[in-house]
Image (cartoon, rainbow, N blue to C red; front, top):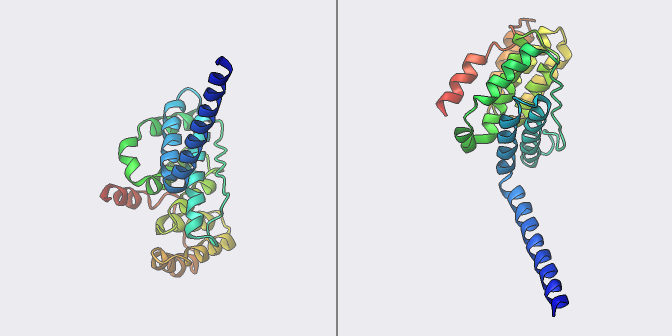
Length: 218
């Protein structure tokens, strides 16, 4: 009798486990932003005490959303892009990023997570640049671009960064990539004409006020 009861418990556990796994797979496929939100929340809660772990959670939140952007743009957005931030061991930079991350309003972000995540990576990139840490700026801008490819400002910021760094070829490639998308096309065409063709560039982060104004309006 006891043996049969134990078997029933095992079978019930397997059934429940299978059901839970299938539900998690369903949620991941249909509502991936929920998993991203969990990683973003965990990043916010851990980044003050364990900076590296907090950054890793942030990278995972972005990777999930970029994976699903690939479903929409399979030939343009890399499916398995992993944003390796590799933020330098600079105490001033870490303090600023920690302050920014812990101040995020997760409740408001939940309603438009994919868009908000792109701004988070953009903002961290500008913070990095403002402290003299430029190595991670390219990765952060590319991540923001992949998260919100229909938003022109990240394309233009990335192209401007390459132009600012003297890499005209990469600037051209960034603009060419932008032209594959409908919404940002005009802005990128204007940058190509007025900046790329004339070799005119701005300080990285020159669109920060415009980006912030946009996000406040949505």
